[in-house]
Length: 114
Length: 115
Image (tube, rainbow over the protein chains, first blue to last red):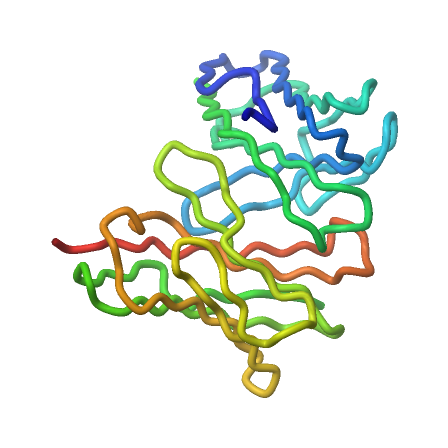
């Protein structure tokens, strides 16, 4: 019954490394999102994609990029990891038509940058 | 501009007593409103949503929420708390006619249940 899968639950990376977080959904959803979750700040949108090869910046895109080469896969890239990017990262997907439908979330990737 | 405020960062209730998690929103449009729940080490799950139909919305696990436009509120309630309700709850506001960047999450309310 898995719907949204994030490739790693836990990651530890060194400062300056290039980091790839992968997300795959099996519901044929058009929209996919990357959020980071920090205590007391809720979820903040990093990037989202509404179609293959299409992307838009969210509220906190600095230091991140994304890739969507196939409809089911949305990758978040930390070009040069820094300690302030230590966080929980959540991927989500929805059907086309905006967020007025249920969003399905992955279980999250807890990234620690040392 | 849209915003959402969860008035309590932590709520603690005894098992079997009512639950009230408070959420106020600000939106220039008629918003869509959601409550999501996140259990420890799990992803977020939709509890319920309001999308301009009935103002009293029933969700899963006995939760419900009432949309009050005059008070700009969308509080989450449950008549009788269960130990399994212990989790983090997020109120979400969105403009259904805009792009996804208009989706705003509240900062979350951690619900603890005392035996």
